[in-house]
Every structure is written in structure tokens, then in C-alpha cells.
Amino acid sequence: MLFGRLTERAQRVLAHAQEEAIRLNHSNIGTEHLLLGLMKNLKELLQSIRKFNITEDKVIEEVEKLIGHGQDHVGTLHYTPRAKKVIELSMDEARKLHHNFVGTEHILLGLIREMKVLQQEFCNLDLNITKDVHKL
Image (tube, rainbow, N blue to C red; front, side, top):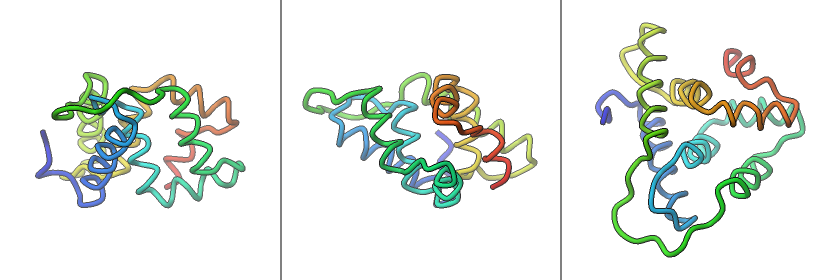
């Protein structure tokens, strides 16, 4: 992958995504796990969504309802095709901004581009996520 270009915080996001997949007994790291990893690392995002009375716990609860818990985790975790796409889109976002690194903000923008469902979920929570991300 692109670990050499990832900032330390972005690397932590991917590590937390892996931890979340293991915690939920999933055999793959998906876009939802990336969201959970971001939630653990983006204080600015958390502050932004709190303005709308949305808590980190509420987001985690909604994601867990959406993806559920798996059976016992076995073996090596791999990224799903959509999660890989998010990482590719993150690199694209960094390039668009003329950055030579991929940070958490790029991962979030890549996730938003890939996950129309996520944007719909946030719309259901009365949050225009794209507008708030650009404020960060």
C-alpha cells in the first residue's frame, strides 16, 4: 500500500480500523472500520458533529448496527475492495490539494466520496458532512 506517504495520524487510523475489525470479529477491514478508525482519531470531526448533538458513541452504535458482529475472527485481515478504493481516493484527494502525504483529512474525504451510504446516514442525522469537513 502507501504506508510511506501516510502521516502518523493516518497510520493510526488504519491501525484502529484493523482493531475495530478484530473487535467485531470481522475477517476483512471495510469502509465502516475505516470510519470507526477515523472517529478515534479526528478530534476536529468529533467537535464538528457534537454541534449537531451527535456523539461518537451514537456514530459507533449506528455503524455497528449496520455491519453487525461477525463470528470468531481467524487469520490475516485484508482490506475490502471498497476500503482499498477509499485509500486510492485518499491519495487522489491529497494530489488534488498538492500534498505529498496522505493524512486523516484525505482518508475522510476519500471515505465520503466512496460511501454514499455514509453521507445518507449523516444526512439522516441532519449533518452536511462534506461542508463540515471542508471547515476542518
